[in-house]
Structures are given as C-alpha cells and as structure tokens.
Length: 178
Image (cartoon, rainbow, N blue to C red; front, side):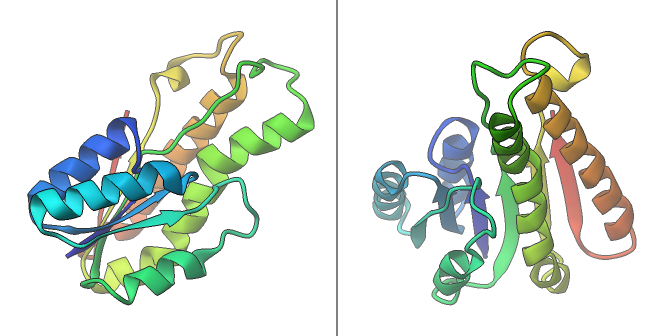
C-alpha cells in the first residue's frame, strides 16, 4: 500500500510519515522544498526498509503539476491513501489582507488540497482508500489575526463534510481532524 502525504516534511506530516513507514507502507512525501523532504525519505527508507519517494510541489502553483506525483506513483504499490496535513499562514493575515496574500493563503490551505483530493479520488475510490484532511483550531471563531487562514480551513472542513456524504455508500474512507 502507498500513501501520499502532502506536507510530509515537518510537523504532523513528518510524524505521520514516520508512523506509516514503521507500519511498512510505501510513501510519497510531498512538500515545497526537496531539501527537507529528500533526507527524510532517505532516512525512512533505510530505517524501515520501505520505498519512500520525495516530490517537490508548491501548493501555490496553478495549475498543480500532478504529473510529478503521478510519475512517482508508477514506481510504487497501488495508492491506498492521501493524507494532507498542510497549512501555511503569514504574519500579515488580518481582515483587509492584500489580494496577493489572500490568494496565496486560500490556494495553499483550500484550493490546492481540494484539487489534490479531486485528482486522486477516482483511484482511491477503486482501492477503497482513505482521504484524511486536517483543520485548525483557528476556525473556532473569528479574530483579528489568521482571518484568511481560518476561512480557508473552514472551507476545507466543509468540503470534507461533503466528501464524507459522497463516500458514505462506497468503500472510501473520509476523515477530517481538527
């Protein structure tokens, strides 16, 4: 079984990568900076004797370069899951944020995760796979800071709720954690 972990080079993504590799799963680790992801992939491959492939992908790109992941997946066992512990923010994230930063925060925290999910959904449906999203406590209530981030994560949570309804009568598992 192969799992894609988007945001797999640090924090929660890194911890998930360690856990899944220890369980014998093959991994495709996706992050912005291959300098972070490549050493982790090598470490996990050696430590757990599993295939772990790093992929550099900036979620701020439009359109997303799916072919980078798709090509790597051809060298792995069938895809079983997509885990997306992604999220990014800026110090300037307040109400009235400029258009460029608003689009950046929205794309990385909402649009790109949805596009990744939609791209791999047909494969994961066939394999009775799992899709896991991660939210933020920042969505609990509005505040001066983190306005765009909280809104994007709220939108992602709603999208995952719709996905759960869509997947209810299939073998697909949809999970969302805050």
